[in-house]
Every structure is written in structure tokens, then in C-alpha cells.
Length: 498
Image (cartoon, rainbow, N blue to C red; front, side, top):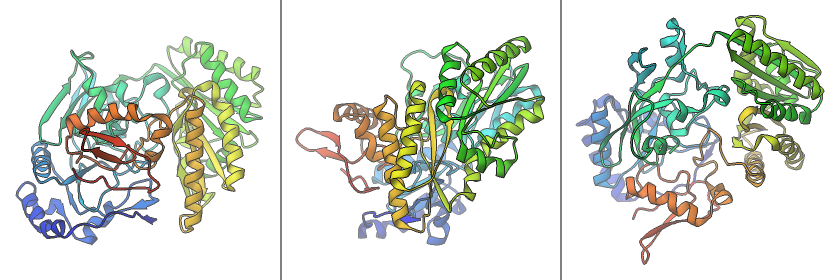
């Protein structure tokens, strides 16, 4: 773990801490306000885990009204606020500040309504992703977005990061499965966006909040779509002698008009680690492997499987295995879902990257990652949501060695820079947070960022919500009255008040 270099809390803030705690106790239950070192320590990091920073105060509201009062209070007192869900984020988006209040939504953990007629579920933000499916599967419904952390990640966090998953190729990410939101703005205003219908009039404000990483408001309720389970689902494991053959197969499947429910790719290093961990029946002699799943009408599924087999053979596949039943299909996916923990056998730590590229550039980017692996002398295992070009290189390192972590960060940055170079973007689903913050200027010029900041400041004029995330450094130019983003060598600088 690395302690972040943060500005020291000024004496005025220290003197006011007791006052803030006492004021919060008037808003929420006393047990829901945490402020001593032992109490706040569990919240000092998220799943990114390479960095830690204890918050000043942790508050756990239980109602929308409490969230509204907390934000209104902090807005008047000019106290920074960092929203947090389950803490499973991988870009440091929920990492605390030492002079900020951490608003944790874990007590918002109830499904408020299941509406099969309108095919939707109304849930509080602390409800886990998988819980939605578990609540409706008795009537053959499910919630489509399925991040690998779905057993633990929360719906509110999914909205904040616009999370995807292995089935986002066909069914979309969170934004494509969201019907409505209840959001509290920094001044305490409660907004209701969208609803149970598929279309809303006016601007797509809900789309603006989805993926905004807690910079615009705090989600207190979400209405999500549920889908009827398809009649037939089959998964295919395909092994290839080279990474290029696997990448070319991905491109050809999509080019031929086939839209699988999911299409995942793994390289040899990850195939071995995962097979040793999960025993899913993966081809250990392959240099790369695809899991291609199709669903729908039985005849349609069989036709798609046949076409995929022919395309795989055309791209020199060495093995093809088709799931014979639901148990075997789930076993195929169990290996992929366990890919990240399986890397625990490869090194003391791993750093999970997240970039997105055009599908046709997959082979080229994989070659570059292999080249960079040799340059930095760090092992890397690769998992990809191959169908939509979302890459998850896993860089192996030892967090006890500061030089190893520094090399890992540089390696990861070079991967993301190359993603942008070939026409891709910095993140597919993990968000920018602090991890990619200093790389934003690789993708956007100052005018681009200026327009984004205008939206941020329209909803949060004092920039109190989740400061220090996404944008490199914010500075207010007194003579222009504008805020500019500037690059910085520091990993996690606090935003000055203005």
C-alpha cells in the first residue's frame, strides 16, 4: 500500500471536526457517524488497493432525506464529499480525502419494488448487482449487466462507473439497462430522472449522470430493466495457436453480422492460471482462447454456433468445445469470472488495467502489450471483453516493492496511451478515478475538458463532490472566472477551495 501525499488539514478544520460530527449526529443515527482512526480505517482504500487515505469522517445515511441534509450541510460549510458504494471500484474513484466526508451508501440495501408487468426493478444503490437477478429469477427474469465483481459490487457503483460485464456486447452496459434514477445534488436538491417507461422527454440528463463517477450527484435509487431469460443459451470454448488468430476470429465473427451474447478472450498466461484455479476445462495448449456465447431461439442458436465454428476453423483454431448443458456452460463462465483471483498464484499482487480499442486493432494492441511486458520486465496476463474491445491486462507486481509499483504504473499508462493512439479510449467500465486522471490530456485537449468542467460546475459550483478525481488539476483563473485542467506529476493532488 502507498500512502498518498495529501495537503495537511488546516487547524481550522481540525477544530471544526467535533462540531461536524455533532451536527451529523442530529441528521443520522449516532452509530452511523464514524470518526476515530480505528473506525474509518476500513474505508481508506477500495479494490484498486495500491493507494490508501483515511477520510476525516465517515457517515452512513439510511434515507434519501438524510443524504439530502448531509449534502446541504456540507455545501453550506464548504466541506468536500466523496460518495462510496461497495468499494469494489478499480480506478480509485471512491478513494477518500483526509479533509472530506465519506458518504457510504451501504445501508441503502433494499429492493423497493419488483414490477414484472413493466419489466423493471426499483432498487436502492447499495443492492448488489447479482441480487437483482436472484430476486427475479424465479419467474425466469434476470438483470443483464454482469461485472466480474457482481456478487459484491453495488448498483449505485455500477451507475457511477457505467459498469459492463461479459454480456455487454449484446445487452449493453449499465446505461442501456437503466430506466430511472433518484439523485441528490450537492446543494441537497433531490432530482428524479426517467421512470418506468423507455423514453423520457427533454435532455438525457440520466445519461449524463451514468458514468459521472460521483462528480455530479449521489444516487439514492435506481430503476433497472429486467429481461426474460432466453429460451436457449450455449457457450463455445475455442483455442488458437496464436493471439493474432484469436483476435482475427473476433473481428470476423462481428464482421459476419453475428452478435454473440458475450465474447471473451484470454491469453495463455491467464488460461493456465484460471484453469489451475477453477478447473473449467480450458485448452492449456492454446496461446489464446475465446468464450463465445449465443442465446435465443434454439434454431437460431444452432445456426450461429455452426457459423462461429466455421469462422474459427478459418482462423486456424486448435480446439472447439460446445457446452452440452447449463451446468457446463456455467462452468465455462466460472473460469472467466475467477480470472482475477486466479492471478494470485502468479505474483503477490496484480494491477488490473481497463482500456477500450477498435476490435480490428486487437491483435496489434496485444503485440504491443507483449513488447511492453519485456521492456518493463513485468509479467502480464490478458482478459478482454473482446466483442466490444474492452481490454483488461493484468500486470503482475509486488506492492511491497515501491519500484515495482512505480514500474507497474508506467507500464499501465503506456498501455492506455497506446489504446488512445489506435483510436480507443482510456476506460471501458472501470472509470478514470485517480488511476487515469493524469492521462486525460492524452485523449482530450483543454477545450474538451473545459466543456466537461462547465457541466460539473453547473451542478456543483464549489467543486465539493468527489474532488481530485477524473480531471488532472483544477485551477480557477480569477481574471476569466474559468476553471482549467492542467497535467500534474503528483498522483493524487487535492483540489484547492475557491
